[in-house]
Image (cartoon, one colour):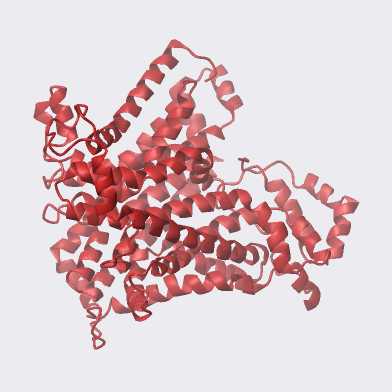
Amino acid sequence: MNRYRPRTLGLELAMVAVALVIGFPVYVLVNLSVRPTSDTSSPISPTSSPTLDNFSYAWQQGALGGALANSVLVTACSVFIVLAVSSLAAYPLARVTARWSRGTYLVVLLGLVLPFQLASLPLYQTMRDMNLLGTPWALVLFYSGLQVPFTVFLYVGFLRALPRDFEDAALIDGCTPLQGFRYVVLPMLKPITVTALVLNAVAVWNDFFTPLLYLSGSAQQTMPVAIAGFVGQYVTDWNLIFAALVISILPILLVYFLLQRSIINGFAGGLRG
Amino acid sequence: MDTGVRAPVSSTLDSTRTGKSPRGQVASFFTGASLKRFKEAGSPVTLAPNEQLPNRDHSPDPAPVPPGRRARTTPSWWFMAPALVLFAFVVLVPSARGVYYAFTDWDGLDPNFSFVGLGNFTDMFRDEDAVQAIWHTLLIAVSITVVQNLVGLLLALGVNSAIKSRNVLRVFLFAPAVVTPIVTAYLWRNLLGTDGAVNSFLGAVGLDGWRQDWLGSPDLALWAVVGVIVWQFAGYSMVIFLAGLQSVPQEIHEAAALDGAGPVRRFWSVTRPLLAPAFTINLMLSIIGGIKLFDQVYALTGGGPGHATDTLSTLIYKDAFTLGEFGYSIALAVVLTIIVAIASTGQYFVLSRNERAAQ
């Protein structure tokens, strides 16, 4: 695998060809998003007179600025809460070997199997009774609980492989267990926290079913629901729709390319977590 | 990132821990008892993901320790309270209520509803749409699992070679996996349309006969959905396989090559068994993701044409929110839960057995 042979060149060309095929939809996406509606040539021929009008129109008509802000708010709050409560909960679950601890861990793991479709309909009623429907807080509450099993699972696996001496030393030196957690354990959890952060943020940001349920009819939408609404409104005006899609993808891809190493390691990290 | 070889360290620390006062632990640490134990622990053990070392030091329960001291060394149970309250409120209680509603005729609003026993479930078997949706769900889950992992594995093998563009390709090929599924689905709805880019492309390269109404034809729509999902998530499988491939020591490959094993033989006899953990994760992710599939179907076909692409999730949504049949809809969700539970436990047992066999 270390030498570059003619056969390697063949593989290189084949892989680039595959990448081009996989990238083809992105070309069409950008190509159509800068195309004026009057241009009806084939979607694969390059746009002759590109314009950015679609973007400004989609941004205003789709209220995408507000949706973007809502998505950021919901993702940031949910992920922060999930990471905080899950890392804290994982600490006794990983360290205490008494029966109650193991039993509780099994119940939490049960949550990995339960599909959210089962809980989301009865919870819809509860949210309605609490007057939370249509507000971003319904989503924050939902994700804060929904993502607990998976996040606890990541943290417990990581904690169990982590030496105990540092926290024991801290406790002997007079830390309370909470201080020991905050100042000794938590910093050591950084690698798995990055993994959990990436996976949770992507899951929450991209979720469509839940906001579709809990925010339907409300003016406060997250990005995926705003896009679906926009598509519903401009059914056949694909150049405009594509501009909206590009707007919704850009922030994700920007973050992705800036932090690609941590993000890819985060996704692959489930393997070693 | 580290490799799985950390077992000796943690087992040593485990064994110094149990049944001793904190002072005792520190003392043993300094007198070198733990070092001795480290040597006794023997050769490194490679841990599969999710697998814990046998807790032989923990069971039976540790010897009684004075309560005051014990509280100092172990984190308190109330650390779990916030997570458990949220988890119970969002997942456990509503799921339990869901199972109860599945046996009623509740419409979602009326407080007066009656218990119908297994009525919703017997209705389901007479409801052609529901039976079809269950079938589609299974079909989609299985085909995604097979195709996505096959493509992902081939991409991973390609990117794990000596090619110069491997780092760029890795980042590029994974990119679709972070994009919102509903967005890629709308993109593909246009690409796969009758005048869309896919048909234009086929026309441009002289394959006019291959042009299709991809999403409008009942025979093709389901496979079009599968194709879109594979396009988006093959890179995800690739990244996980790649992490597995990079943990395969180069020396084993070289040794096998010296012994005369060709590339195919080396893949089958050396790489494949060592990829077992990556297979476990990938198969688990794709099969469960496939079973729960909603967004892409909603955006690409809305379950149509007719009911040709309806899955359990889209049917649950339609029955609850357009037909107001909450009880029936939740009964469908119960079926979905049972399928997920069977798939994940079955897969867990089969694959963990294979993993053990591979080691």
